Amino acid sequence: MRLFLLLSILVLCPLKVNAGENHFFYMTDIPVMNGFKEIKEYGYVFDKPEGRIIEAVAVAGNDIVIDDVKDFYKETLGQLGWVYVEDGIYKRENEKLSLNIYKDNNLVTLKLNIEP
Image (cartoon, rainbow, N blue to C red):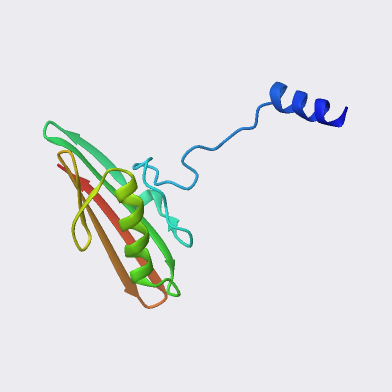
């Protein structure tokens, strides 16, 4: 009986899922690595005839290891169809993604750019 009641509640009252909660606001298919918090105000999207230009920025405490961030995005971006070109540079179709990581005082800043 309890199982029937639980299933009824789940079917009749679907759960709300906040899509993009752990993904960049303007890069909805790219996740924000655990430990980072996106600063949406620093991001933007600009469409032009040659393609889109997108920037996203996230910060974390300085306990984040830069090589771990590089490894995370190398693996994750590869699963999303981005091909590794060289350190911090990926390509997918006719777009280039640049991944820049800066460690300064108490923060690690992660900046992603996509351009044609």
